Each structure stands twice: as C-alpha cells, then as structure tokens.
Image 1 (cartoon, rainbow, N blue to C red):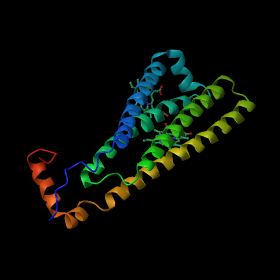
Image 2: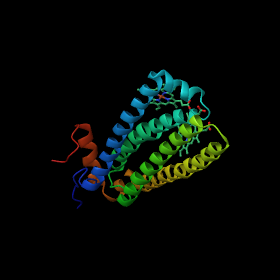
Image 3: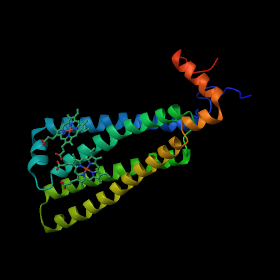
Image 4: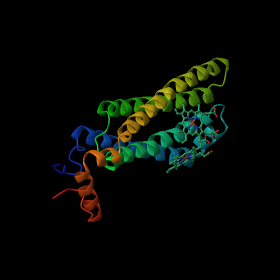
Length: 195
Ligand code: HEM
Ligand code: HEM
C-alpha cells in the first residue's frame, strides 16, 4: 500500500524559499535602479545629450538597458521558474547548491557589466583621446569577462531546471499512483494540501 505524501511537503525547503525570494527582491531592486536611471538619463537634457552624442556615451545607455534586461526581466523569470518547476513535477530542485551559485554568479556578473559599461562610457565621453580609447577597450574586455559570468549563471540555471524536470510526473505516476491521483483530485477541488 502506498501512503499519500502531502503535496508540496517534500518540495518545501526554507533555504530554497529564501533564495527564490532573493531573486524576487533582486528583481525589484534592479527595477528601481534601472527605471530611475532611465528617468534621470532621459529627463536631464545634459545627460541625454551626453549619452546620445558624446563619443562612447552610448555605453551608458547600454548599462541602463542591461540592468533592466538582465536585472529586472531575468530575475523575475528566474524567481517564477524556481517557484513553478518543483510544483509542476512535484519534486524538489535538483541542486540547492547550484541555485546559490547561480544567484551569486549572476549578480556579480551583472554588476560588473553595468559598472564597467558606465566607466567606459564616462571615460570615453569626457576625455576622448588615444589614452582613453585604450582604457575603453580594456573596460569593454572586462564587460566581456563579466558577461561570460552571466552566461555561465544562465547555463547553471538551465542545467538545474532540466535535471529537476527530467524525472517528471510520468516517473511519479509509475512509482506512486496513489499520490498522483490524490494530487489530481486536490487540483480539481483547488486544494493544494492533502487533508
Ligand atoms: C521607468 C522606466 C524607464 C525609463 C524612464 C527609461 C528611459 C530610457 C531612455 C531615456 C533611454 C534613452 C533614449 C535615448 O536618448 O536614446 C532608454 C533606452 C533604453 N532602454 Fe529604457 N527606460 C526605462 C525602462 C526600461 C526597461 C524596463 C527596459 C528593458 C526591459 C529598458 C531598455 C532600454 C534599452 C534597451 C534602451 C536602448 C539602449 C540602446 O539604445 O543601446 N528601459 N530608456
Ligand atoms: C551575457 C549577457 C550579455 C552581454 C555580455 C551583452 C553585451 C552587449 C554589448 C557589448 C553590447 C554593445 C554592442 C555595441 O557595441 O553596440 C550589447 C548591446 C545590446 N544588448 Fe546585450 N549583452 C548581453 C545580454 C543581453 C540580453 C539578454 C539582451 C536582451 C534581452 C541584450 C540586449 C541588448 C541590446 C538591446 C543592445 C543594444 C543594441 C543597440 O542599441 O545597438 N543583451 N550587449
């Protein structure tokens, strides 16, 4: 006889919950920084002229774009998928350690990219000479390095999600039919926790 497991019981892990929330908090933080950046950059004519017309000023626009895209947008996607996938397949995340590594590598990579984009845009725009051209090139190589960290973080995330989903509901149904049936009936009654 199989004993029905409470739906969600094995998924719940306080550290996993904390990290999922950290992705959501990071999303909100980057949104506040990125949107304010856009409002200030667009609202102050001197700044708008600088980013539109100074040599390399466009790199400051790119810092704004990437903090929004890799910060606000991606963090929201990460938080939502980390919440959703374990519930979809009714099993815990494959590796909690990889969730932590993903969070920190992505944040370090993104912050590095944004700081170096901004420095390159400022140095290149204020002192457009041969020396600063060289500096801009070095700083952009740094953007490439930190961008690679962001890429690595995304690969780690994808791997962890793939491994979590690999033995999905079919596997559970075959080994624990009762649980699967109880889950289905709870879904239809809108109750996510077994009585
Ligand atoms: C309150 C929110 C925002 C404000 C006030 C804002 C403002 C601006 C301004 C003023 C520009 C530069 C226009 C120019 O002079 O050429 C810009 C460019 C840009 N913004 Fe935003 N923005 C906001 C949110 C976002 C979000 C949420 C995203 C992405 C998800 C985003 C992505 C971009 C991109 C990709 C560019 C162009 C970068 C480029 O041309 O290289 N922005 N934004
Ligand atoms: C590891 C991640 C990424 C790195 C290292 C990176 C790097 C760069 C660089 C160096 C540029 C400047 C190219 C130039 O000189 O004109 C650029 C432009 C841009 N990137 Fe990214 N990027 C990344 C991810 C993304 C993602 C995920 C998005 C969108 C979802 C994006 C959207 C853009 C946009 C809109 C531009 C501006 C194009 C333009 O206005 O000329 N990037 N990126």
